[in-house]
Image 1 (cartoon, rainbow, N blue to C red):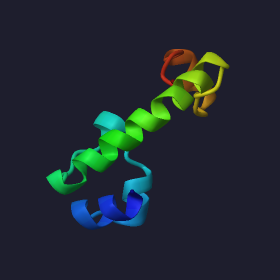
Image 2: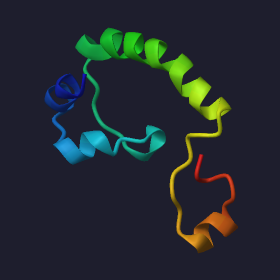
Image 3: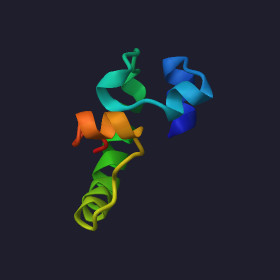
Length: 73
């Protein structure tokens, strides 16, 4: 999937790895939309299970974590 996104969206490897929802805007080819949708449907239950078990947070520096308590999710 990443190889298709790299080629189709003309991204560098680290740009692809760091795509986080609304943080990045890029062109997205229709040819891979179905593949991505199927992938997301497959991993959504795993993601929801992880969140239910208390996982899913990212590290934030101490000051940011205090200022924005829910930003790590």
